[in-house]
Length: 332
Image 1 (cartoon, rainbow, N blue to C red):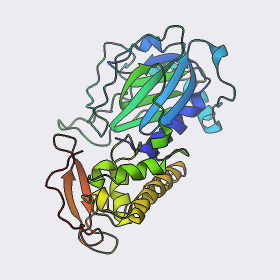
Image 2 (cartoon, rainbow, N blue to C red):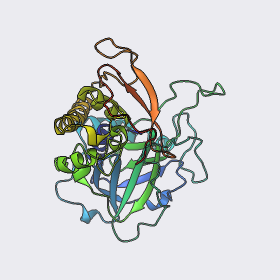
Image 3 (cartoon, rainbow, N blue to C red):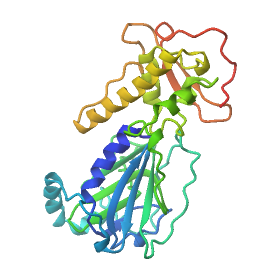
């Protein structure tokens, strides 16, 4: 599942369309009645952890002051796409995707938040509603273009991914949402004190959570305390802090816990800044065979019994295991 920095990048892509009216819809979503989105105005967009929220309203006059106009690159793309208005409801291979009867063949892998149960479609009616977007393992948003197949599937077909939702706006541009789940809600789930990229992130709450007698690799993925933190950030922060993933938080010194939180915030912030600058984030331990010092890296899956197991990479020498003996099973 895309982590906090990636979802905030998606938020940046959507924000220029605030204040625009949806004039046409497409996609293969089974959860939404796409006709409910037509003619609505995109009022606002917010991001919280790994969740993206879009607010729609049927009345243009209800637009909040200071809405973002289309940026110049998007305006150019909009003018180019306006002449292709009819093709915007077509998939990248030319097949029509606006038909409600079309069903996607995409699979949505479960992530850390797979326990979240998204409700079904609900009419917007005369009140503003928020569209809650939860991204799958490979979820993404594309602006004014569709995703293309990068490799053949198991049957050898080069079939382009089918978007779950396509929103065509009055300015001529469009957004295509891939590999995500969507549902209506009355308001966004706002918990900025747990969002690792929020100015209101509560370090004290995070440190208290990490101090429990539980493996830190599991506590870090608990979205109640570290919203937006995923497997990449987990692995990188633990390595940079020199902490073994199975170390119990209660056995770590306050300075070690402080260092771990510092690395979580620093790595996440640098990753986000790199995304805005078009740079790829470089990892030191995640999916590597050797650490930067040259030690052999170990890999295993850890998680609560009966819960979601995540691959973890660590260096036994740079991240020594603390005495006393660690627990035989992980229990959250």
